[in-house]
Image 1 (tube, rainbow, N blue to C red):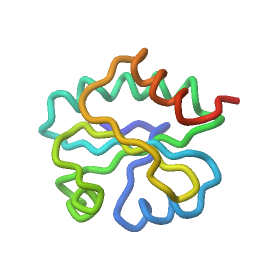
Image 2 (image 1 turned 45 degrees about the horizontal axis):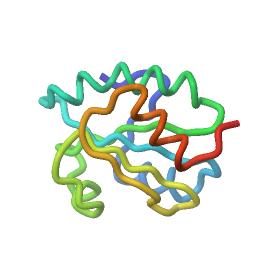
Image 3 (image 1 turned 45 degrees about the vertical axis):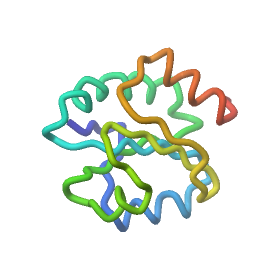
Image 4 (image 1 turned 90 degrees about the vertical axis):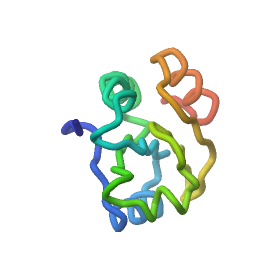
Length: 112
């Protein structure tokens, strides 16, 4: 379910990524058994192509890394967390359309 374009995170790589990258980071919290998460995966792929020069997109499996989900109060999936400069700047829960996710990202980050 995770592509070559979208990073698959662990607890350690999650912390490293949001702390060290200069680009905004969009994290998708998901699980293998989650139907809506599977529907959302191709949309994230399309979003990656548009934003690949100005945004990092990553996924973290809530079943494998529940501490991260708990830390950020992720209680339903899919949930997107948007970080910039090591700070959580916005959250979206549920499957978003391509148009909705574009609006969400454009309202929070500068597109190059």
